[in-house]
Length: 330
Ligand SMILES: [Zn+2]
Ligand SMILES: [Zn+2]
Image (cartoon, rainbow, N blue to C red):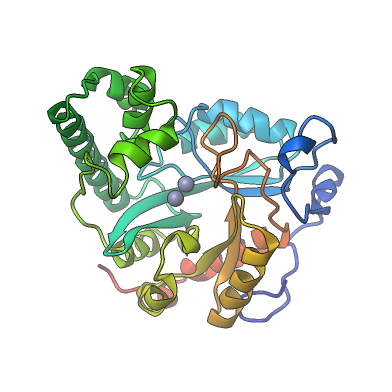
């Protein structure tokens, strides 16, 4: 694939032998029945992963160990509204040859639903970024509590302390609806996290609580301000994403997540074409949260992402860090 602006991208250094292995890219995710039968071939790059720093199951070190075991070249920890896992992941990856890209996934609100904005190669120690993310997490806690209260009003009694425990709130984990869902599952009210969303806490559910609105454009500008590359995550989950795209680009958007989770090649290719047409980097990843793959996510390295995406992302990061190209402050 060509670079965002059509120029050829060459790696800055020759790839060591182990990394070159990764350039054989899967053209599809392994089918359900194939798992365990075939020797899995992992994607060299996975730019969408969650850990216990938000609503993932594995700790940053456990995630790194799995990525190293599978021979990945680079991973991005994209925890929701938190960069709390990045330090541990970088430490764990030291000496392994695996690159850990400092990243985040910011949940934002639009009339049609939620828009998620990924940010790559950002300065995760930036005080303004950290203050804003801390604010967002506090909002999430307040929202989680309101959901639990609303469930109680429906005669469903789950323990708030347990929800926080599941979220790892004391270790800085961001409380989210998946944690409430897991508490509902644990208490036997639903059989699965998916059922919890469908029956109670999804957007149309009786215990849904919206939280303070944060526009995707604000998240894009925030990431640019911290020197990062903002990318619209899993675009098809937002019905009107194409309508929204010009205003996101105006705000400083630099990428579109095209190789996402369980997206089939039929979904991926038009997105890659649209990204190229808009001058955006086509990124991708599994959206792994731990445990078994879901209807939308796969596992670490389970979603095929071409290796050249990494070079294009690095080039975009270099551009994003040039003051002349910086987006206006929010
Ligand atoms: Zn997301
Ligand atoms: Zn995600």
